[in-house]
Image (cartoon, rainbow, N blue to C red; front, top):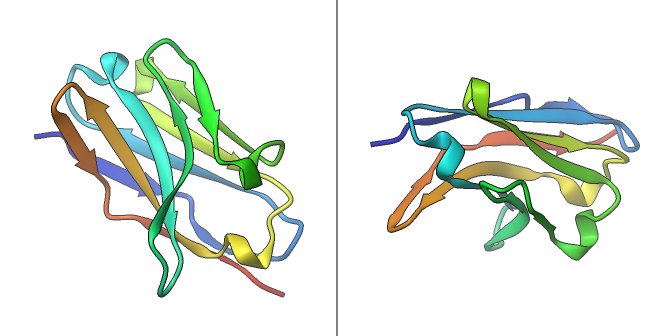
Length: 115
């Protein structure tokens, strides 16, 4: 069982920045593909960004140029740097860990963009 703990969410004004972190337990983090997804109230959970074990990244179109996903295998942590935040970025952000058939989710961290 892999435990994922997200942190870094909060309230930020439009145009502001936040950095989310997701710390994973276990010894196979470096082999896993990691991702961030988000879910706004009343909507489905959508892809934000992913990063493979080989550091290849993929972003949803609306996040390109504003969000950056990165990972630190020494710390078993994946990050999401979010800049130029908009009210429509308000959502619960979830961390995802995929390694073969294993697929784990964190409990999420709330991001609210509002003035």
